[in-house]
Image: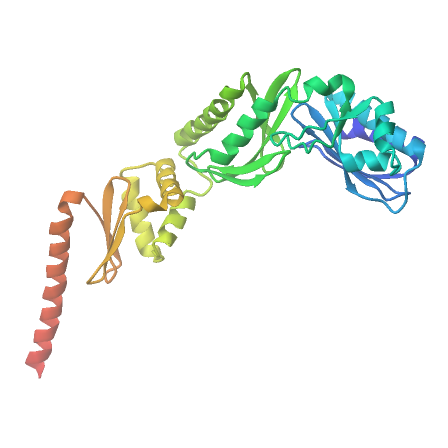
Length: 348
């Protein structure tokens, strides 16, 4: 629904119930309505095949009977527009029926029944009201929703980090770019909308079966990865690598820059970030050790790196060459110290 269509619907509603304040979030089709006369605030949003209506804030006064009825008609019209099941929350129904102790019976007269069965996957408490004729459709897409939540809860993809988990949407970083995913149903088809940081749609994914959902998202991520690989572009090429080095207490910019140059001879920027990300995710796999004499040893990928803290230098070493390399470094260090000691002795 665009802003102009909504304004027309709000204008018609105001003519029936009085002045309204409203806010519309087009990315999630979320609508906040405040009846200025009573101060009741209602909140509606789309989720899968449902239009959910909740009471956000109780007003100072009761709604008039006509106001409650017109609001129900408004949401039913909205549901028809989106072709969604109307799901009215317990407290919203109570407010719409003027807080009557008989509000359940009053809702029943309007064709609504209480769902009475909690559904954790769909986020239903069992106290919501739905049209009696739509009861069987309520759990139609439950398996898709479960697969959707499971993906964002359990998936460990390199460069993928979930930052917000909401019923309406999930926000996450992929390749250091913030994206938002919204699950909805259109014409009996589950669709995942991908939005950018500005809430503009950049892609949509069709899901035919619940067990295909994770694969569909992974395929989309792999396509993004390939595009970035071809372009060899990341917004911040050292985003996860910086965190990895920070975890090792490596702060010197000279060493960090030299280390990155060494890595570039073996990996592209995407592969470097993916490796760093995996180490951050599975820290027990990090192999590191300070060595007496001012050396620090750690592994990244299939190679070892030795930092000479005195010289502010870093070397890439094969595992079979570690012993001989460190012996040479020690010998050079001891030789230098001995030379200094002897020169001081002769001067005395």
